[in-house]
Length: 152
Image (cartoon, rainbow, N blue to C red; front, side):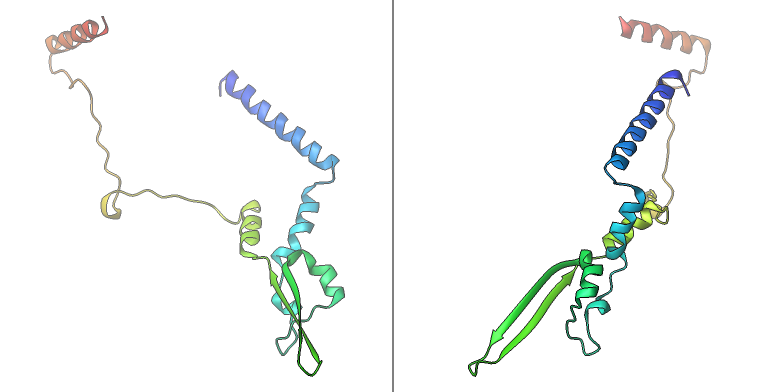
């Protein structure tokens, strides 16, 4: 590693350290982020449904799991006889993106790209030497002379 690369690497580490300290100063730590992500990653539709499949929005659970709720709507239908029926519709945030993100941060997902040649076979490589390899000293001298003339 040359001196320029060392300085560049030190600068990157310094910038990362400054950013981390600034985030910690405002309370944005790895632990805090983990606590914010946990309800999304571990959300379960079962926490919001009765055994019969009706929406169960328990205030105690709602407070605990509200971060996972994307949409919550209360619908009240009034019938001609004056009776009312209240229904709750809700939607949770998709957890697959959160789980994939966390798995990536924990090193559980390794992104790997493989390249193959025609028909899935190996990539064909051809090495060329321009101009062609000289067979005699005279050919080599001609190539050197031609290269010098081309530069002028």
